[in-house]
Length: 52
Image (cartoon, rainbow, N blue to C red; front, side):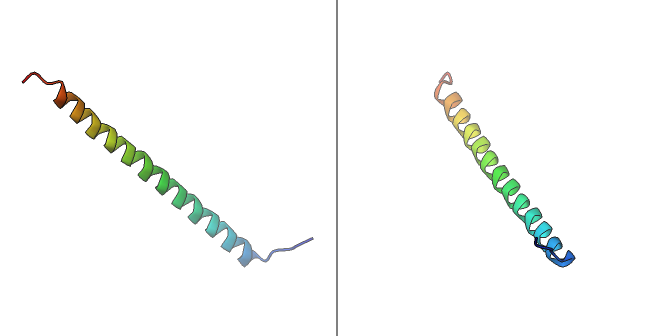
């Protein structure tokens, strides 16, 4: 059975926290980019169908 030192456990916890932070940030950027692209698409769609 492996026993970890307290410092080793803290390092693992810190790395897990960093990984979650990066994953959350990437998810937010992907979601935000798609939201922005959808907004631009709506602008083009509305402009194309505007009464001129």
